[in-house]
Amino acid sequence: QTAFINFISDQEWKSIEPVSSWFGPSSFLMSSMSALFQLSMWIRHCHSYLTEHLGMMAWMSYAVFALATLFCGLILGLVSEVFGLVCAY
Image (cartoon, rainbow, N blue to C red):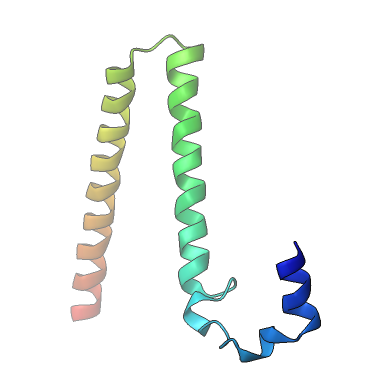
């Protein structure tokens, strides 16, 4: 505590280089990291719901997420191919 107070009162903070814009709290990189963290918390919540409230076995929940991942990859791949074909003409 006293070290922090001394850091402020002695203006030691002036000798520290500012954080790069890439690592700032409002940067695209940090916003993306925050979104990934929120996604992981949502997935954890869904897993808990499936196993605790619906009584699904853990491996079944993992299978649901695996199939959802494959389905999302399929959709993104198809969209990418259609977009590529449209842009080619």
